[in-house]
Amino acid sequence: MPTLGMPNRPHIDSFRRQARALQRAVRTGDPDALARLARHHRGAAPDGDNGIQLSVAQLVVAREYGFPSWPALTRYLDTVAEHGWDTGLGAAAVDDPAREFCRLACLTYSREDGPERWAGARELLARHPDLTRGSIWAAAAAARPDDVGRLLAERPRRAVERGGPFRWRPLFYLVYSRFDPAIPGEAVLATARLLLDAGADPHEGYLFDGLPSPFTLLTGVFGHGELGTRRQPSHPYWRELGRLLLDAGADPNDAQTLYNRMFSPDDSHLELLFEYGLGAGDGGPWKARIPGLATPARALRVLLRWAVVHRQPARVRLLVEHGVDFRSPFEEDGPAWSPADGRTPVELAEVNGDTEIADYLLARGAEPPGSDPVRELIAAAFRADRSTVDRIRAAHPGAVERARRDRPGLVVWAAAQAPITTVALLVELGFDVNAYGRADAPVEGDWETALHHSAGSGNVELTRRLLDLGADPDLRDRRFDATPLDWARHLHQPSTAAILEPVTAHKAAGGG
Image (cartoon, rainbow, N blue to C red):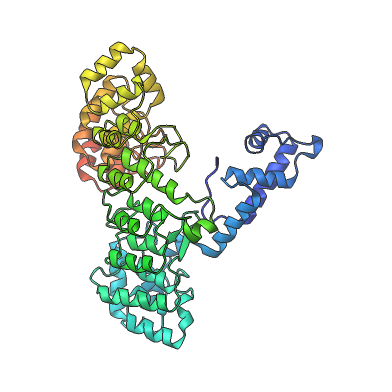
């Protein structure tokens, strides 16, 4: 199990320094260093005054980052050196009109993305209509097949040459371009076919900031992500372009696409990917380059967990109908919101109060969960079923105390997923209305309070109710050091900001 997160833009020299520092610390008997050695290399022990060999320290460092060996870590860093890309380039303006057009036109999966950039690209192209004539990267981003065809005729290898402001290949600029939603589909597909016919790789991708999940051509086609569909939309012709790439051999098991699209209940991307074998195979060339990537089957299990706990019944049905394992407990760690906690999908549905998904899974053959008063109490609370809550409390007097101990941040998750009556019922049961938790997943995490969530989501009724229940408007979240009012302002929620302004002691915007 990794205990450290991979840094952005990792370099081998940093890991070498970490290994040497660990070697020195073990030699001096540092307790933390000895604990790291015991955790990641059982059986290894310092050899008197000599400490440990550098190779042992390197192995411990590699395992701390989730790699089985130092060579596996170095192979990954070689992959980063070849395929890594720095999202900071998206914020760096350039003088050359063709390069600047590419920079403004394309998704960069950074905070720079959004309609304002794309409007700038349109204006630049209008001022310099010939900027695509000498740059195949700009011609691809603008989907101008005549210019692309002429440039390829002059030198066919241009189809596989890196260039432009991001050092991407031309096809990548085409599929990540968003500057003009009204661009003709015929021009987009004609440009893509020219590049593929000239040797462009349908598997092309980059490791954004050196992180291990590749952003591929398919990732760019399907779009979406943490900034929402306004700032990170799908390509206007995602279906046709996606099918073209899949027909050309792109592997449908695109983990970053699954992540970027999981926030929306729309399953059209999954339906297309299942046509081409999503969930089957060995994971393609990227799995070969980065062995630590999830297998196709495991990636879909992680997606199933998200769909269950985020009340996406149509997605649950689609995944089950395509053979995703819905009976086994989750015993392999995925992301932080998908822990190996041993719960089955039907248990997760029940504890989330989602009888529709639970009943569906049971009807498909999932094993009914055994009796658990704590799970049943939380499930009843999420259904706002007070009579069942009272019955469980009478039969199991310690259930509420155990629930509070096991799920101290439950009010935050309830604020994001359940009716206001559930939030009020949990507070009545003694759950702390000011507890820190996570609103994005039903796992414990010291992130924000329920009031932060309601303020940032613009939920006026919930914000007022939380204040009535004793929520403290002056608490700061643990990630951005911001008050709920800061969240409302930063996320452009004037209705909740108006409620919080009179009751917040420190009204200056924080770091939210």
